[in-house]
Image 1 (spheres, helix red, strand yellow):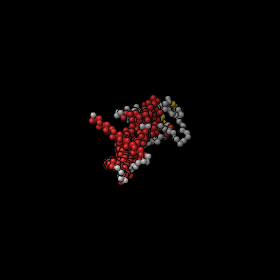
Image 2: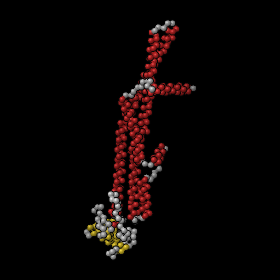
Image 3: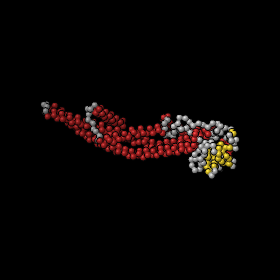
Length: 395
């Protein structure tokens, strides 16, 4: 029963406090009550914290969009995160494209120029996909997580203490208003007392009322001192929390540096992968197959009579029999050297390769352990690796 009485009294006190704050807030908005202003330093800290929260949210959300453009995937990751469960691993776009290219190249045939190129491109795309996955994981751990911790942790604490400060400020101003009214009432009562009303009963009643107002005034003064003390204490707590925003900025700066380094690593990896791919494609395909975007036309593709890729054995004008590139692959499995005619000009990429001129005849032979797309070529005293697809094997 006592507990119930205590709960009822506490509920009534809380309701009275809430009503007092509501009245004070309304009168302030209507310009009918004075408002205690916070000091300039605290106002600046509050503004800085609010600005930090707004821009941190924007940066965090846009970074998530950058790392995961698919909104459905972001929603799924958010749900798994709230459920405290690990999201299932899914193949990303570069990996999916790479797998399609590899499957297509396998279907067309790894021995064909197009099929071989598709496989090489697919492998590069899958490596880019792996780098993309590493970028997402590193950025989420070193950049997004600290930003999210600030929004969901530190700033929520600041917002809670700021709201409590606002309530203490309303209590303080309400106490000031009550004290002001009590002083005004006591002053008017004192003025009436000086008029010396006639009649004993009136004087007794008036003295009682004057004493009551004086007690009320003293109580209002005591209440004001308490609310002022609570307000000052809460203002100090809020100020200490807000001064931590500078440390937050320093921490976010380190996180930003980690994010930039992760991006640098990612783009450097992608650049290197594409350089390697370009070099591989340059070795496998003649220069006149490459499209020049600055030209309105494409270099002509050699006719079937001059390109033996995928064709049967043909007879050249010199009477020599030219075989298909499949015989070039067979050459790597046997010993000895053969003569081969160069189909297209080729510039050596390094000192281990041999530059070629179209229509010249060179000697080629296989070397154990060499890449299947290459043979060792010899022209006089010059020797170096040459790409198979640039050659016609002569019988």
